Image (cartoon, rainbow, N blue to C red; front, side, top):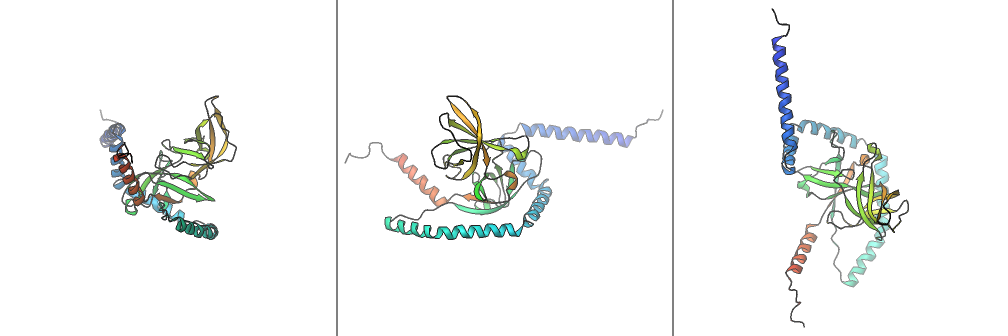
Length: 297
């Protein structure tokens, strides 16, 4: 009796099942690979199979960035010019004071402009791609900032390639930062708190001593501890008391300075290698110094 199944269709069905099982096996293997191996596999995929899709996403994002309102950019430029003009007398006074005290000029980190692009794939909502990388001196751990009215923290660089970098913003589960009030009186830690939707994501200020009370609108900045974020970068402002743990500690919800969805043009803080080298030499000298302090003279 003739078969009701078309042999070519039946063979195609078995082939599709074999391919699906193969991808399932590869995904299971990748799931249990070490973190370094997963990063290498992801980089290889981005450079090969996913390269056309990433290029298309970058092209769309670049077109969207170029279509921004020129009046808004002009307003930001005018605001920046007014700030620079207002600070000119302070810079001159600072320079004269340093000359009188015979102090050397400070060597701050370098700010590098970059365009921020979202991958646009499921599971990567808290990650971003920058159009600069190792060729421009970018390194893992460099902070990423953006100015919206006032400058604020966006996130941190995680991986770097020759002409691109991948980072996480403050909504990523792995993000955390040592924080303090702008006056330096109260210290704690900041971590993300997911909302019911992405626009509802907030930051949580934890480890605040129970006897300290923060008013709504209090500015929270980085402390500079840990060697990742420079001191004084605005993170967010206090919204309300989230939870009180009695005679132990309290937690506060923060409104971030930079909303993740608004990050487009950013600044990457690149540390000054000269200053880092000097610190290493000083620390090495301190470690190698004798404990006795010489002959007592």
